[in-house]
Image (cartoon, rainbow, N blue to C red; front, top):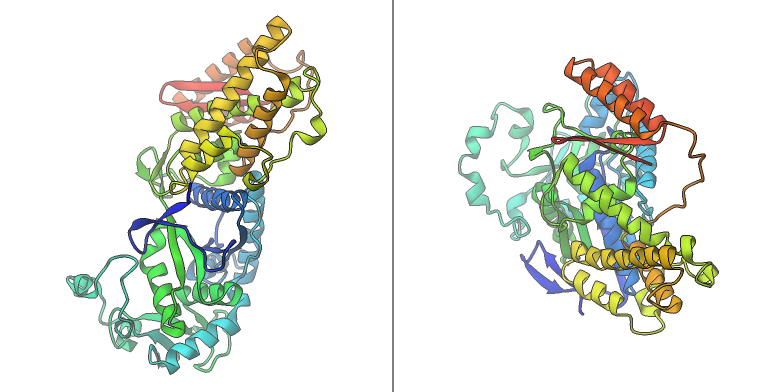
Length: 490
């Protein structure tokens, strides 16, 4: 039952061995805070949240760091358009980030370093690179000399000679930045200040850091020279993570990370998500439509974390239905526990696998499955098995007044489900009692849906949205798909 992980660096699955026994140092490349978080961010944050939870579940002490990139051209452009400041834009979207992640049940990291708060570490690292011959100044800029680092390309598998072929067709030789470089592959560690932009004093003049150096400095300042897990989206493998390795390892002479883990990208209806295609979906937009946050978590966890995942309304409908099954099981104790004579005071608390009082076949199967490169889809099958068994026993209890399985065994099954669901960040809340005579009946709901459909066919999208919002206010969630519109009461 040894945990094994697919390491992007070695391109193979390896046993997990930490730098320090029993402890994990983990860094996740977080978001650039110039806009609201989208479905891609949701997937990444859910995946690494569950990875962290699982490592803690199997007994590791995890120190989890996630950064914010709060100085970037996109942030500056937004500040310019809004007649605001870089700091105001960053602060607004950092606040929005925490709001969105709280709704998704994401546990907060142990620390959230910001690039603008790490200037001393950034400048110190650049200075060391310069002293060791891996960096050179050029008219207020500082560049990394890529060819000086013999290991460049080892993460992505790219070779400089292969990348050079055809590169001349994509380079503007008149570009002033290009003319400053000794080699086209060199990248900026420090950028000279431009008029009107925020800048920090440095040995090379006023300016700001390049993107890649920020993470190298934050990892080193918060976690040391070598960490256990460096995580991020697959789109960061090159050049960002490749450049991190070059910067950090050139100075320390040590591996930056033992394991490089990357989550797959999110598509929408089979296409890359983008604003130009009109399929760009933010987390808050999705949740404000009435999609249950736990269904979003379940949707993400039904796919192997390294593979691409396709967001469709059919997929989110299936995830919603799956969540209702697990939710029924999680609420079994509150619904039937008293009738079965349980002590509910000790029942609803997740227990780490290392603290289970006796061998538990469900825990063992879950752990054996997930230990295979964080196979969360396989782990979910154990949860569904438990939830369906509890639902079956609940039906028997309602109709026959007793269960087939002993109350003691049922409580253990429920406790196990609660524990494993907690590992995946799935939590069911007891819904407040409502007066069933209030609100719309089924026929009235169907009539409203028909009115909305007619509005959509007439391209009266404002009316369509109004009806959807009216139903949502009544506690009715609509889920559109190619087969029509489904609905359920929240």
